[in-house]
Image (cartoon, rainbow, N blue to C red; front, side, top):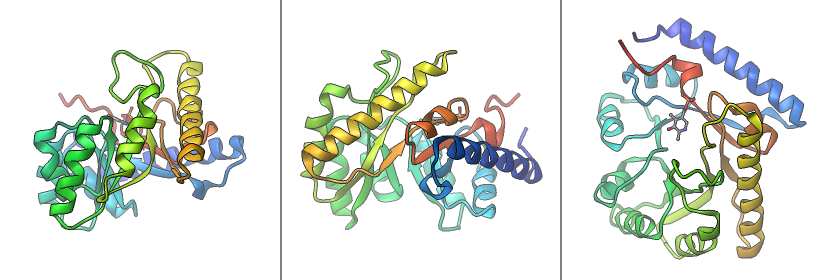
Length: 233
Ligand SMILES: *Cc1c(COP(=O)(O)O)cnc(C)c1O
């Protein structure tokens, strides 16, 4: 069932309250952190809801699904890719997405760089790290971070904003928190070694926002808590 706009607004209010409480606990300002609504597996209507509520970007994890929705939305909404990317889709992604959060190997960085150049644009990206060392999760291993960043810094048509991670599924909040701390430490190390600012830390979802905010997240990616369950019956 498609959620009603009023329900979404109510959910948004609750999510914002959770974010605010976590910011207070972390001694952070609310404007140090953005909310990225994740619209994947929901009808395009929910992307319009997000725009109506003043949000200016949404996250999608499947390229094909996102491209279809982009054609159905005429606002200036920005689309961020938060799911895995294959080289054969790199051209359309480099042309249409506002940012790619899932650059996890040099080959995909080079493909995006080439197509962004052909499209005459500079594409903002994040490096996706497997900061929780989870065999089930994608992302570069922490040991690969230096080589990946070095390659991306050599891509004239990519602009690297920071890092992204997904915490392993676990009932224990300490696992998520440790993962987010590892991503922040990786960022701090890369930033000083390469002398670049990597301000964005995209980490935290519906179930682990608080932990992420306590560890310095600058962008939480929230689907379920805003739009409800994705398994439509
Ligand atoms: C689906 C997804 C989210 C949102 O997850 P929820 O638990 O529904 O908030 C965030 N990040 C990524 C990469 C996702 O694929």
